[in-house]
Structures are given as C-alpha cells and as structure tokens.
Length: 195
Image 1 (cartoon, helix red, strand yellow):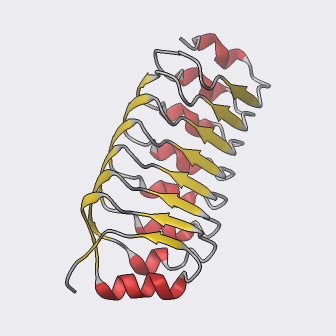
Image 2 (spheres, rainbow, N blue to C red; image 1 turned 90 degrees about the horizontal axis):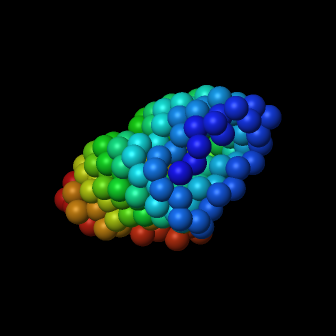
Image 3 (cartoon, rainbow, N blue to C red; image 1 turned 180 degrees about the vertical axis):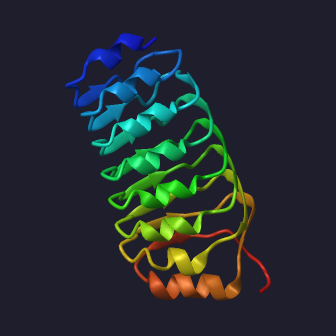
C-alpha cells in the first residue's frame, strides 16, 4: 500500500511508484502535497476511488493512474488543477459521467479516459480545452450525440478517439463539421445517426 503518511511530504514535486504491485487505494492525504507536479502510479493494482483531494494539488501538471483497478467517478475537483497538461486514466473501472469541470483545465494537452465504464454524454465543455492534442474516450459506455460544434474548436488536436461507445452517435453534419475543422487529425468517430 501507499502509506497515508506520504501526505506529510509537503515539498514533494514528483512521486513515481509506477509498475509495481501496489494495492489499496490512492491516499487522500496526497491532497496535502500542494506542490506536487507529477504523480505516476500507473500499472499497479490500486483500487477504490480517485480521491477528490487530488484537486488541491493546484500545481499538478501530470497525473498518470492508468492500468489499475480504480473505480468510482472521475473527480470533478480536477477542474481546479488548471496547470494540468496530462491526465491519463485509461484501463481502470471508472464509472459515472465525465465531469464538465474538466473543461476548466485550460492547459491540458492529453486526456485519456478510454477503456473504462464511463456513462453519459461527451461534455461540450471540453471544447474549451483548446490546447488538447489527444482526446481518448473510446471503449466506454458513453451515450447521446457528440457535441461536434464544441469539439470542432480543438484545432490543435492530433488524435480524437470516440469509437466503441454503443450509445454514442454523431450526426452526418456533425461528422462533416469535425472533418472540415480538424483536417489533419486522426478521427475515430462513433456510429453516424440520422439528423
């Protein structure tokens, strides 16, 4: 387990415990490490929720929690991390909706939430993340219609993956809008539905 006492490391800027056999949860006490810039806990056996307290780490630039067994929702508190550039949570068991608050992460360049159990719509607020280069939401249970006009604002994007969400669709005009606005991006889009 990662000891709760890690939260006493108030000057900590980088914590890398990746590719081990760590179990238990992500300590909420990490929220006390307010100078933390990079947290790498991927490829472990961590379980439970991602603590809301992570949102107190307002200097955070990179959060790598992929390939664990984390459950619960994506914390809305991450919207407080306005310097966050990389958020990688793929291959967990996360559920619930994608919080609108992620649209407040104005610096974000990579957002990977793929291969989880996320439900609900793709938030139009992600259109505010104009520095995004890679957005991966594939292999979830997302539903509704893709907010194409919002995502068309992501002109820096190089890869947009929304496929393998059974309940997610895009209108023909929405598909055309994305392909016109993002001509150089690799687009993996869901099923095209009627207008």
